[in-house]
Every structure is written in structure tokens, then in C-alpha cells.
Amino acid sequence: NIPTGLPSINIPNMFSFNFEQIVFSLQFALTLAALGAIDSLLTSVVADNKTKTYHNSNKELVGQGIGNMISSLFGGIPGAGATMRTVVNINAGGKTRVSGIVHSIFLAALILGLGKYASYIPLCVLAGILITVGLNIIDYKGLKDIRRVPIEDSAILIIVLFITIFGNLLNAVAVGI
Image (cartoon, rainbow, N blue to C red; front, side, top):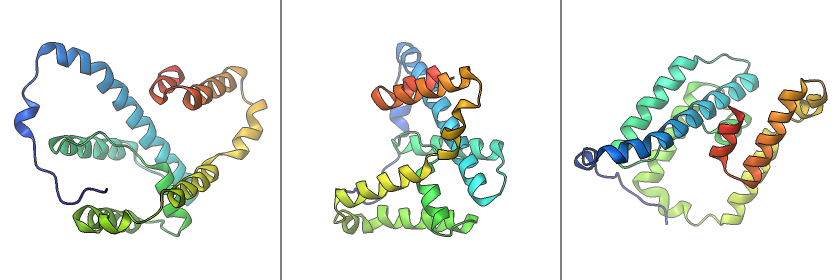
């Protein structure tokens, strides 16, 4: 089921915490912040390469931070750049800010009531789309050049790749950093 309607604001719950919870949560908050920043900037670089444009990293990260703070008021989880959706959008012809606005309007329509119709899409169809887009994101040219880059960089790439596939993405980011 896809939930519909806007969630309620949970401001009173935000202020009911103790010091031990803050210390415990700080590690995860910093890890998610770093992962979100890296993911958003990666998405921006991928979009720049495909559209031959240049992004403003400061605007990207400030916008992401503001969005995540507002999301937390509604009990949302932190978000970041969506490389797969961005690549699909660009491949479909969306190369301006208007495509992002249209995407946002479509997501808002899903939240406000059209989600019940999206639930009829078979998961195997969505999986096929994700696999195809995921394969299209791979930088095959970069993989061919792996022998030409310094051995340290190649080792980091391969180690992070294996940790991502067989382990945990957060651990892979920590090792990569």
C-alpha cells in the first residue's frame, strides 16, 4: 500500500529526548549527513556530465539540508540525490529545472491520492526498470581505465564496491572516505 494524504506535524516529540539519546544518535546523524552529501553531489556530477552543465554545490547541499529539516517535522527520514531518477529523467529528455518541477508535482499527486493506482504496477516491472537503469548508470569507460589510475585509487574503488555489494552501504562510505 502507498500511503495517501499529508502527514501530521510532530513538533512535541522532537523535544522529548535526553543526553544519552543525543550522543547515541550523533554517530548515525553524521554518517547519514556525509552519505547524503556525497550522494547528492554525485547525482549532480552525473547530471552535469549528461547535460554538459555545472551545478552549484553550496546551493545543492543547503537545499538538501533545508528539505531534510522540514521532512523531519513530519517524521520523515533524510533524503539525498536520486541518481537513478535523475538519469531516467535526463534520458527521457528532461534537461532543465522544469523537469524537476514536473517530477515533484507528480510525486505530490501520488501522495495526495493517486498512490492507490500506482500500487497496481507489478513489482517485477519496477524491478526490471531499476535493473536497466542501474546498468545504464555504470561508468564502463571508467572501469576500462582502472588500470591507468593509481593502484591506491583502484584498490579503494574495488574494496568499496565489494563492501557495498556484500555488506553495508554506510560501512562502504566510511571505508571509502
